[in-house]
Image (tube, rainbow, N blue to C red):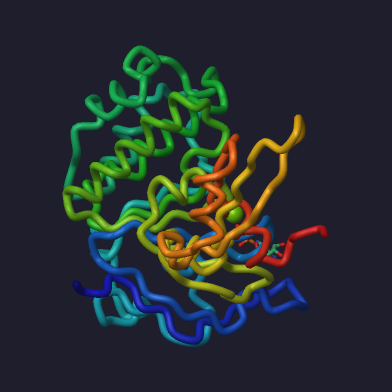
Length: 286
Ligand SMILES: Nc1ncnc2c1ncn2[C@@H]1O[C@H](COP(=O)(O)OP(=O)(O)OP(=O)(O)O)[C@@H](O)[C@H]1O
Ligand SMILES: [Mg+2]
């Protein structure tokens, strides 16, 4: 599979800042996959997205889009990408549909945004002024806006932030459908639910450094506790025994416990993405 983006030794410092914002980060995004950039607030997620979308250009290192340094790409690059900004700016006096018609006019390729508005539950609100939208409605409008030009590569900065579970679910379903259509998606988030349900690959960023890149499954294997805890009854109380998950089927002590004891519960040591986030980003307060 082709690499949509290759980021090599990317370094960036905001002109007004004394601190390096991104300090030598490298990763690649495979075409047709969902890539998640995870990290705590202030880690550098939105800054990375701004660089990859050519909004910030004063960086060192390489940012290649299908093998070409993005600094050398002309405006046709914007025809191919869709961008969901972290803090969207809409025209508050215009309706949702008028906003979309306006932003759509910048692109050669158009998409059926009325169908998308229906999908995200904004069909009726399409004719309402955006200034009257709730926060979640604005987030959904922003999502539709990112898809206006039927892009091949979609950047979404916190796409479900501030949405209720039902609306977040709808957005996640659409993101998965986009992947099925062969689109590539780059999500910045600190919401672990998004990562577990969507991402094929995740990179953890913290203080401008990438500390880990892997699939969510590989991370769970790496950071998971490889053990099984068996809880059983013992004279009116409960006791626990812990076994290594490897070779359980031939572990005599485990098999004896199952045979002889009155089992109450059996748990494997599954680590959640939240646990991994806190471990990898060093935000664990133990
Ligand atoms: N325009 C700016 N000028 C100077 N510093 C900035 C600017 N924008 C962001 N920063 C700094 O860069 C660092 C990274 O910010 P960034 O917005 O990329 O973080 P983030 O990971 O997206 O965080 P969040 O989860 O809160 O959105 C922070 O220390 C922030 O203060
Ligand atoms: Mg951000």
